Image (cartoon, rainbow, N blue to C red; front, side, top):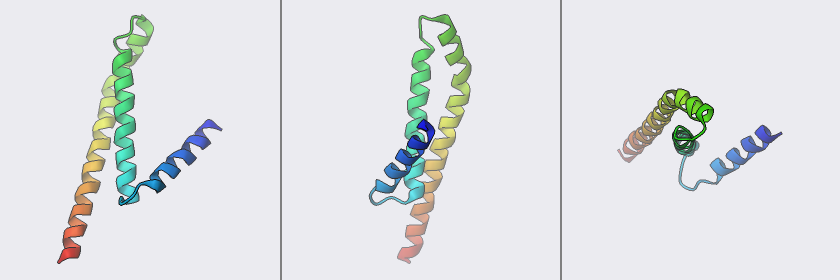
Length: 90
């Protein structure tokens, strides 16, 4: 049930972005979500509780990789839109 509500909320947020294509809004939301997740795990990696710290530390490399992929997606989408706009101006 919570997953369904989250999906609906995300779809609503993406539909409300003004002046952006769905691709741009999606890419930006992925970067934001991955940045937040990465920061939470970095904080947890400094936890005084050993089990929390160890778990967070094991996840950081993967989370950083996913964050970089999200950023690359956002860059690709932005470049694609820029290229399309340039072509339309010709």
